[in-house]
Structure formats: C-alpha cells, structure tokens
Length: 435
Length: 94
Image (cartoon, rainbow over all chains, first blue to last red; front, side, top):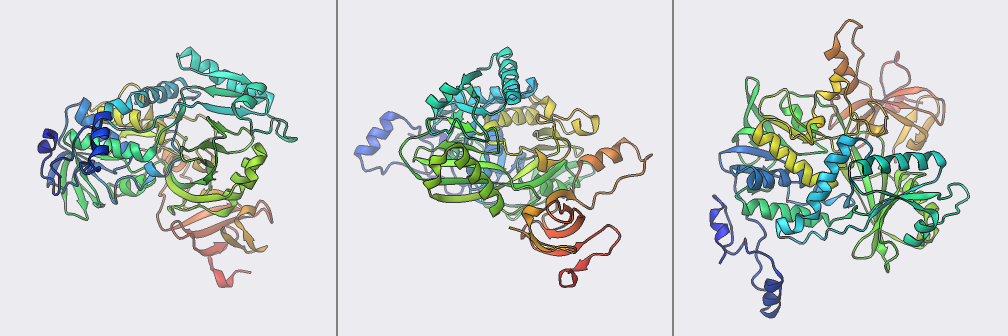
C-alpha cells in the first residue's frame, strides 16, 4: 500500500505506512474510520557514516535544497542534519509572508521564480501549505515615496511581474481600519502586488521534510554539527553529536548561525547575527485580508487564519544570538501599529518571539561556493528568507549538483563584496544593522 | 532593555544609544591591499559570546563608548569611555 517507505535507507523507526499520499478521498476514509490510519510524515533517520551530500540545517532552505536535489537533480544520497526537531528554527519563527516586489531586476527575477514555485508547491509536495495569495499592500505617505513605489511597480511590470498603484480610496476599501488622515503621516496611496500573500510556515517545513524523505533523503534530527573536517583545502565531513559523518559536499543552510558554522571551516563571513521580533494579538473577526506594510515606520501586519493579527517591524539593532526581543522595539512597533490603525489599540498582544538572522553586509543573501572546496553556503537571508525558500532550495541544489551557480542566483556569490558588486536594495552601505 | 553605564552620564537605557558595530575591527595600513580592505569593510567575527562593540551615546554626552557585551546573554562586562582609556570593570565606572 505504501511502497515508497521501503526505499528509505536505514531508518530507525519508519512506520510502514509513513508515506501514504494525502487526498480528499483519504481524508474521507480516515474520517469514517476513526483517524487511525495516519502515521509519521517522515521517518526519523539515524545518520549513516557517509553521504554524497550533507546539508547542515533542517530549516526551510536546507529541506528545500535536499528535496530539489533528490527530485530535480537525481541526487538522493543526501542527509539533512538538524540540531533540534524540524520546524522550531527560523522556518517556524517568521511572519509567513511571500512576495516578489523588489527593486533590482536580478532580485525581482529570483523572488518571482520563488513566487511561481509557491504557486505550485502544494500539488508538488502533496501537502496543504495554505498558500494564500491575498496580496501585499505597501502604503506610502509622501510624494517621494509615491515616486519610488511607482518606479518599483514599473520595474516589476517591465519584467512581467504583477504590481499596481492604488489610490487612497482603494486603500480604504481594502483595509477600512486604516486611518488615512493621520495628522503626521497621512496615507497618500499604496503599492499592491496581488500575487503576494502568506503561507503556513510549519506546513512548509513539514511538507518539504516529508517530500524529501519520500524521495530518499535522510532527515536526521537532534544531530548537532560540532566541527567541519578538512583535508587540505577541501571538506571531507562533519563531526556531530551523533558521530562523524563523511561527505563529498557540505552545504550550510543555518541562517542565523552561518558565522559560527563557517568558523569551524576557518572562514569569516560578511554577516552579523541579529534578532527580529514578531507578535500576535488575540483572535478577532476578519478585519484584514491583505498583508500590509506601513511606509512611515517599520511595521507590517497580516491576519492569520485563526484571527490573530501577526505583526512585526525592524531588527532590534545590535548583534545577538538570543532568540528573544527587547522592549524598546516592541514599543516602537506597537506605536506604529496604532498610528496606522488606531482601532488596534484595544487589542491584547498574545505572544511575542524572536528569531536570530544572518544580516549580511549588503542586505542580500548568499548562495555560493566558498574558499573551502566542497563547502557551499546558503545564508545571509536577513529578514527575507521565508519567501525565498523554494527558489533558494532549487538554486542551492543546482549549485551542489552542477558545481556552478544557477543563473537566477549567480549574483548571490560571496565574491561580490571584495569585487564591489554588492546587492544593496536600500543603498544602506556595509552596515548590517542599517538594512 | 540594555542598561548601559555611560562613564560620563551614568546608567542609561539603550534607547539613548546608537549601536555602531564590532569594535575589534582595525583599519589596515593604506598599502595593505584589496583583500585586507575587503576583509576590514565586510567580514566580521560575529562572536557568539563576548564582543567589544561601539555604542554612541547620541541621547546624552555624544561620546563613543567601547562596550564589552555578551551576544547571547546581553550581559555587559566592561565599558570604556574613549579609545585611549583601558577597559574598566563595571563597578569602577561612574
């Protein structure tokens, strides 16, 4: 009944029915038979002594890279090593937004490729990731901002990506709670990408892990990498809390901790680790059916399917590896929220959390070979890694399999810094805390 | 909320300060070459542990401080007022 599970090598507790496909029919049958037929979505693999490819980090990018390596590039001798359980890192800590409304052509192409992969992801993975293209709406409050957003919309449309300007009245119609006539920051209009939206992030982790395991990848949880073994200038394997594992290629997909892992191979990266906070309010009836960003302060918000308003702002602003936030930023973000939507002032904040991110020196990610042969880096995602998971995984898999960068991600190389080709969307300079 | 003991102004909240990054980075000699300068501008140790860093007291004395802070616990171990002074333990500051 479930032949796929037999192809999974050396798994410890692979239930025989672990790989059944999900379908409406199966949902109906399980509903009528007491839901007793469901089983593990993926097998808990024990690490083997050697693999062709070891991916360090079982977050969105690591799992997606493994899945596309197996499904698109035919490399199934792959292990994903995750320090804890799948889904508790940044893939489960972001605010679930997807969009491709960038400024630079190379970034628009990359992120729109990701958006296209999101659009077909649930069918591809056979997993309900609740992809919801509800639209992303960026508000502007000055004439200069209007010009900038109009230019951005035009640049996107030139590349065939959807973007439109919307009037004040349309903003009010889309989001009635917005205070258009705020005395200090009146809303002049908005910039809308209809295809943007949200995806349930846990389902992304689970869906990729399940699909990768079905394709033959070992997902090894509770396996922390403690060292990278080298022979001369090339990697030969990793030391882990579950013993040494040999590998021809090692890919680091540990954004937030890329510097620490790279240091094990003797590398210094153009990255600082910073914390970004997010917040959820108590659940209320539907009031917001787009993702909205504020243009006069760093604040963005969407309403989850459970009804809570999920919101966040800027990074706390100084290096940290602490997965928590500090109060000044919590206050600043809340102030922006009630400036834009005064009605939110009466809502209670239910939860707050933080995620540690790789803030790169130009605000753009790194998908690149490194100075150490056989060591590939997927990192530097700043606070934009979630939306890039499908494209990041695909292009990382391409780099691992083919040994050369995917054309859509070639600009994310590490050499760009020394070569003066930084990808600085904001023009903020080499200051991670400024991006 | 960090509480930073400014040697000139006393204990102040972090919102009075502006973070200015890793203070261990040293500008190379003018003839050190492109690699040394690329490393100086872009590469960072990004320690998970004790780090010396610049904080500018913009909302106070406007002096640049060197603060030794733990990047996981956020504990502050020493603060020095100018580049010329040696680091002082916290109980000696004020």
